[in-house]
Amino acid sequence: MDKITAHIGSAFYKTEIKSATNTIISDEPKSDGGMDLGFSPYELLASSLAACTCITLRMYANRKGWELQDIKVEVNIVEEAEEKKTTIIRSIELFGSLDTEQKKRLLNIANKCPVHNILTNTIEVKTDIIQ
Image (cartoon, rainbow, N blue to C red; front, side, top):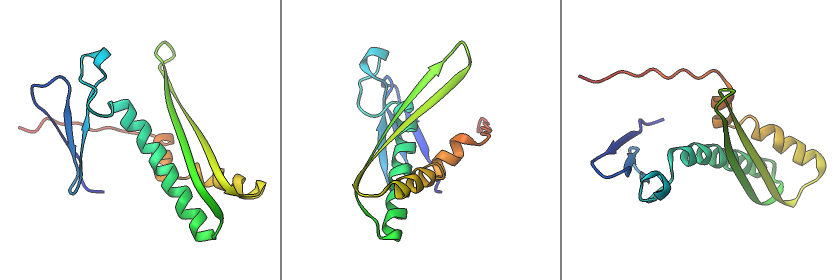
């Protein structure tokens, strides 16, 4: 993966996020002092899981030649501050001519998408300040 860079100037809280070839904007909702110009950081995290799930299922179904016309993935992040716990709820809707076994297999594949694997394994964040 190419590195991702984020830059915020003096505007509350518009952040420009860049990869080698793409740029997106992240912001906070107006209720939190932002201008709602882009996805919030939480929405970006949920988007990563939703997009990876869709892509992984599409790749698998295409490889198998299955009649899967459309995939909808909804992701909600629920924080429980007192328990110091976060629950990510992912709902997948599959459209097409799929039998029960194919749907079961797709659920299994969804649980193996790369972002799902990152989120369900131990995560360590190392941070330093560049001098």
